[in-house]
Length: 183
Length: 110
Image (cartoon, rainbow over all chains, first blue to last red; front, side):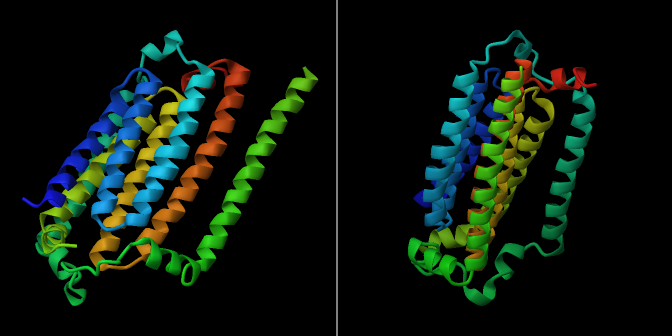
């Protein structure tokens, strides 16, 4: 078996295991570690799928910035209350039915597509010969070139979204200051 | 890139990747619905976004089209904004009520 293929399976199983840790762990910091493992494994899968730039961003932005923010938040609040010992909602059974329903829907859709044409994944891109992707596909050079030419509007638009988020966070924090002044 | 990984992506790798995406997304939905703290709900949303990213990147590789990768970069930014605003709101709620359990909020309503 090719090393890349083997690592692809390993990363996929690790990602699912991390997700399960996120769901089942009792303490929030263990859940955060599970999510972190899941994200790092997904970064490996991205790299094998030739999305090198996205894999680097996954490690820097997700596993770096966002997870540091979440873990810092857990440390800040120092959550050790009794109420977290009971982990799940009272409506577990109702949600369980819904969950099984959407899982069945997803699997049914996938099965439907595959049974209609079993070679979906081979015929879908026969015209562009996907088995031999060009070496530079998804590298930082074509990625950044595309980002600043074809996708420039999305790039600028998303920077507007970031600006709006900064304003929103500042306004939320200031609301709290005013509230405390009034007390 | 060698031929073996390309053949794999076309063959059994597709079904494996889509299965990973489905399982991760459903775990994310379950975490969002069943865990009782706002923090776990936030992390469940992150897991769902990650699953969608994997889907986009797999099909970007399959079609050799950069659009999927661009869209996943935009999802990164949306996730960063969501975490920043969400954590600001959660810290405020924690200061007011002293807890981040969601059931407490529904009991204290009104």
